[in-house]
Image: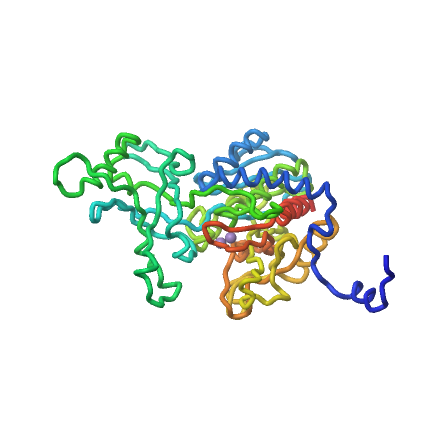
Length: 464
Ligand code: MN
Ligand code: MN
């Protein structure tokens, strides 16, 4: 090899550039990464909604010997418990060897994703075609949700209280649903993207066949209701006590000739949730109590009693603390958290929205995002230098490939995560997650190496 010049050596010593994970990992590690991502892809196809993610996590937790949390229970180091928050959020916890007053290691990812929710009274017929009215959930570019196959997932509570689980559109034999869009020939006005498709026009096509031969009104709607009655025993009023979500019906899978990427609906934030779950399962007898939160409602501002603006995490920690004769605050002030959420990956097709020096890149590992927010760091946690050092040190000593990132240029826009709500509890917290291309679209893209580095980083953090 050619000897380095003085300038090259000095640059190597003084400059910082995050490396590409493929350049620093050996073949074994790339194989481990690819195997890990097979599990992740299965998880994506199994869990399309927050409820499905909770069921999935609960099932593997039970298989791994986790027990439901008992607020009057007696726990010793190494005990594993889970806390189910109304079937829409869940906490996995392993009791540490140290007293809980030394603080907990908290991971927090979210398992809700942008989608189209049915309105409480969704079904109507117009021009002998039946549709569902929807209200979109989370930040979407509405035009991306038209003319793609959709699946219907969720629950319906019937008059008698029986709960029915709905999952239609994922199997090859299932029917699918779609939001129609105008043909280009009749859509030539120069509309802004935000006005191209109106929220109230996100109507989902659900049928077109009349019931019987009579020239009665609304027989297409009647036929749909009759099919639903025969299949589920539900009537129109039962939609009011339901949560039905339309999600993209295409499956997760590899992207690219080299298969280095995964395309799927809902990477945000299942791409952090899955590594978080796997890290929680891998950590057997930690020094500090580990708490892995999988929360709901992040995409609509974390409000509601299954979101992290509610007290459920604080109450859980308070209950754990009480078993040791302590208060929640005794634990929280010494606790540390990685808010496990995605950041935007630099997209070379749209470079103008990013500050290239501070953008996150595919394959450069997990992104540590010191602050999010917008317009002068408004509405964000801004991690302190000391905690940034702690995280940097954990990742570097455990060979985790990582990078820093900022969500777009200053004043270009912005966003938020659960970090600030966890910071409100007095916990040291920073955002750490996977870079995503086409975020919030029906088919987001991530790099496999970054998914694997999330797992490696989260595990190292729980063990710190
Ligand atoms: Mn997110
Ligand atoms: Mn999001």
